Structure formats: C-alpha cells, structure tokens
Image (cartoon, rainbow, N blue to C red; front, side, top):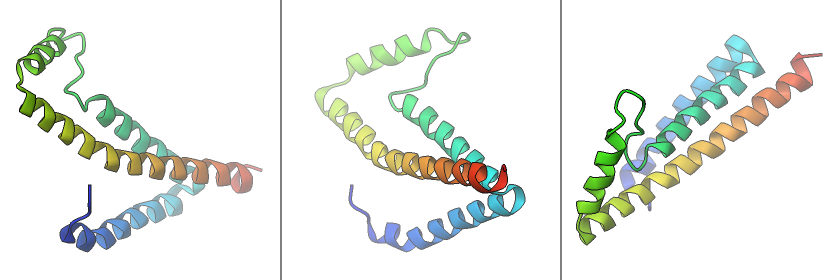
Amino acid sequence: MRMTRTDWILLPILVGVLAGIALGAFLIVGFLGLGILGLIIGVIVQRVELEKDGAVSNYMTTSLYADQFRARERMGHAERAERHAETQSLLRPLFIAKVVSAGLVILGFGFFFLFQLP
C-alpha cells in the first residue's frame, strides 16, 4: 500500500496529535502514563485484528459467526479476492500501531521502573 498525496499531507498533523497525546500523558501521569497509553493502543489494535474477518460473536449472538461464514462461502472468486485485498490493506497500519504500542510500553514502563520507582 503506497501513501497517497493526501496521506503525506495529513501525516505531520497525525504525528503532531499523537505527540501531543503522549506529552499530555507524560505530564499528567509521568512515564507510567506512556506505558498505559501503549497498553490501551495495543488492546485496541488486537481487537481490530481479531475482528478483521468479521465481528466476533459472543454469548448473545452465537449464530453470528456461522452466518458470516456462510456468507463468505457464497461469495464469488472476485468478491473473495476483493475481501482478501481489503484485509491485507488493513494489516499494514495495524502493524505500525503495534510497533508504536510496543515502543510506548517499553519506553513508559522501562523509564518508570528506571527513574520514578526507586
């Protein structure tokens, strides 16, 4: 997936907003805030990755997953290829979010234990 012109224009804004959120978490709670922010991002990313093939059913809607499976079986070859391409385009931003999450967790909790805990 290549970045478009709009992506390049919006990238500095996104980086600025994320840096502001990270700075705010650091100023309010310290390094522990960065670690918790990383955990929150990681949980959200894992949830999105689990649901990339469709909603995950729970005890209230036990037939939901079976209905989605039957709908995928009825798809034609072109629809399956389109769905696969859509899923693959989703995985790259999720990987970047996982790396950011892991970096915030390591940085936040590592510096918390190194500088603020003793």
